[in-house]
Length: 245
Ligand code: 6PG
Figure: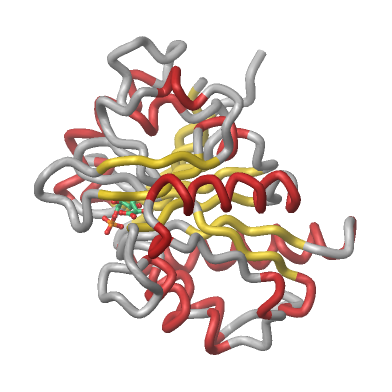
């Protein structure tokens, strides 16, 4: 019997960021007490920015000297590029807290997808599984940079791979953690807000009720037991909590 997903539906994006920050502080504190360190996979895109800002301004019990930071995906651009996920995380969080730079592992997208993925695969093997992976979801149901049509079979045995975003998305060439890399995280927290995500999310909630089929959206393929933090606009329902298998 797999751990069920949990869907927490909150009134607005600010409430999602507040609840996510509360959970990250709790999970980090628990990991640092139990294991002496906390490994966190950051999500990219725009949704998590408010969460990162909250962690920077109100860290609570987090001991930044004992945190390892990984990225869930990156566009193949340099760290100063406007579309860099790392750039967003740096501005919102990493440059604002006393974190050990040696424990921040940036995906070096400027190397190009194959070289950057190969290098990051090695880093992921060295760091081991994360305590918490943060995920977002695109309007098409992608997560990290695993887009619909991704060749998941080719990822077997890999932790980081070259990936490609379809036309219309920022920067086609990407690096993404694989499902294997994401699924080995002790906990997975997905932050999804906005009415434009409602259609994909409704499909994902149906798909996640049974083992993912070949046509399942990428985020539907993430292992069971994900904690979804949604706003009412994305959930299309009233605020509340729903646990479902
Ligand atoms: C990326 C992200 C991606 C993101 C979704 C949602 O590199 O694009 O990692 O997976 O989580 O695209 O993005 P928004 O939060 O901007 O809607």
